[in-house]
Image (tube, rainbow, N blue to C red; front, side, top):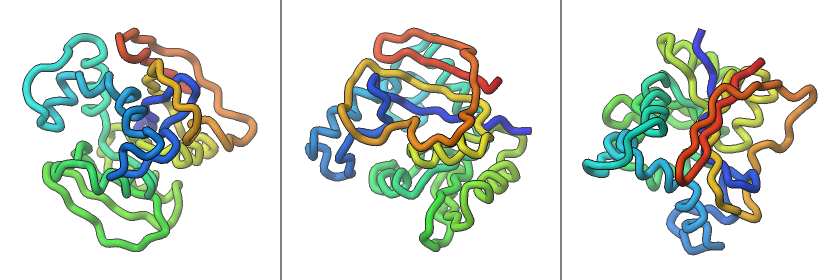
Length: 209
């Protein structure tokens, strides 16, 4: 069965997204600079630059290998409407997923097909139904819960997350959307599986016990 993984960046004070994050207004509450500092590590990876067609070059090594492995193992993505709305106006035409993407939303909308294998499906029936569809589409590959924090919390509370991959960046947001809020008891139990030190983030992988 497909592994369900969470793969995200996290600030040192536990936020996935800074306060005031609104695409088109990066100066608002200085969220653009904060987000840039959080994600600086991945922008420099060769694999990521190739995928988004940023040009040649970029870092190689263990972190780049980890990024490539995550992309290659993922057969379907799940995200929330807030993340989709921000991405819709900022992703390139060839959106950086190359898989089916299931968007949890109350909005009814026809599938949105993008080049190179990305199709967004808008799911009104809740997280469990989205996961069932993702398992069917993944073809034995893994399912990535892309975000945001509230969607990840829903899947943690369902007890279906098998792995957490967290890039912990040495930046402080001071506010925003926390990753680990609103978790029900008993909380899922994980063990440390891997730690990779990088110059801009520490990469932590936890697997469910």
